Image (cartoon, rainbow, N blue to C red):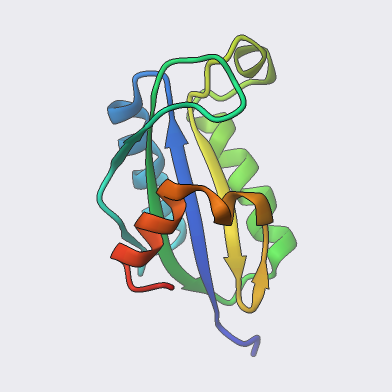
Length: 126
């Protein structure tokens, strides 16, 4: 049997964010029954011109391999209505990123963002 890996997930939306975060969280709970979420945090956009975001961090564990998790995440984003066309317009219906899978850190630049640091601290993850 595969080893269980801890996963840290970043979730954000700048379009009807309360609704879209709630929808994404419902889907994530189906895939990761043991998931827990940070409180939501309002943030200004970084690197794009758009409406403000609401962001959260989530923590869960899984035995699924990373490549399968990444495919599942892409499908979750599409299910929530995320498209490349909307992203080009600065509309992020939902963004779900794996920040850490087991010992492997991902999206390294995101780790330095103040809101990520604050949410990680609030969840006692750093």
